[in-house]
Each structure stands twice: as C-alpha cells, then as structure tokens.
Image 1 (cartoon, one colour):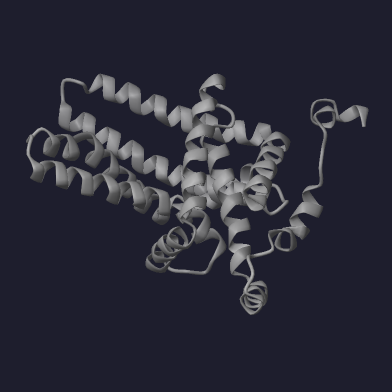
Image 2 (tube, one colour):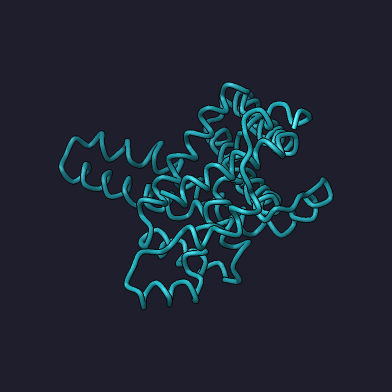
Length: 260
C-alpha cells in the first residue's frame, strides 16, 4: 500500500507540474482519433476499408503511445522534455509501437468479432472458446501494459521484454490489476476535460511511474537483505530517495504557489 499510495501521489504531482506538456501530447491523440472517426464515416459504405482504417489508427496510436512513454519517462525521472525530445523519440518508437498496435488490433478484433461469433453459437463449445479468448486477451493486456516502459528502462530485446512483462504480472498480480484499473479510471475521468487532461499521456505517465518504482523491488541488495531477514520488502527504505525528492505539498501550494 505504501508503494501504491506514493505512486498515485507522485503521478498526481507530476501531472500537475507538467499539465501543459501532457495536454499538448493529448491533443495529438485527439487529432488522431478525430481523423480516424472522420475517415471511418466517409468509408461507411465500404466495411472492409472502414475496418482497415480502424486497424491503421490503432497501430498509429500504438506508435504515439510508445513515443509518449519515452517522453514522459523523463518526468518520472525528475527531468523534463520539450518538442525536440518528442521528435527524437518518434523514430525509436516505430518498431515497438507497430508491434503493440498489432496486439491492440488483435484485441479489438477478438472482442468485437471473434468472441461474439462463438457466443452466438449457443453451445458449450462456443462459450468455452469465448471464455478462453477473453481471459487470454485480458491477462495479456494487464501484463503488457508496462511493455513500453520496460523497453525504455531495461536493456531487453522484444521477446525478453514480453516475457519480463508476464513475469512481473505473475509476481505482482494485484499490483498489475490495480494499475490496469486505475489507468481506465484516469482515462475515464479525462472525459470531463475532453480527454485533454490527464488523457492518454497521463495514463502513460502513471504506468511509467508505477513500473519504475516497482522495479526497485528487484534491486539485488534490497532483495538479498529481505531474503536473509525473511521479511517483507521495506518500501519505506526503497522509496526513501524518491520520497525526499518528491517532497510534500499542501493544496494551497498547488493552487497558489506564489503564496508560499
């Protein structure tokens, strides 16, 4: 709970301090979504082309999500980024973004067409296949939510990163499920601001913050000490440096910083 609470707190403070940057990135997501919606409406007489446009939009969204993660990871590390940083991170995002875009596309196809098809069979076989597909894609989404951040923070190849994501999920199922649900919550409340804030960029920042802090758990010296003591991980000790850097601020200092 200490780690989760601090993650939410740090995310909130970083979102507040970088609201303009986060909002500007979200405008790109909104623009992409608007273009896809318009194209889909124009191509409505051609279902195949319309579906291909949606798939292409999902892939482009994956690239944008990867690029966003590379940018906001600087915020997680108590740094900053600018327009040049976004342009620099765009090219390295292509491979990972396309890969995850294809995965998200397969999720869209599975949930929109494949599972409904098996459910319409009205048989135990169809229900079994639909359930298996649901849990497979759901577990994969929960595990791979950290893929972009893991690729950014650890020197693993794509296959190793995917494997690492699932290992983290198996080792920390409740934490991963919380992050997944909290991401949905963050994105849902973004509707109040038209998805400008915190939006998709805010979600990517939260996931990067969560992964960076969770990876502290696997610090060799702390893990060895915990194993010798046979005790739970001391998150206060692990997070001491981050807690000191983040500090604490009152609501007054957040809304009226000039009065401090």
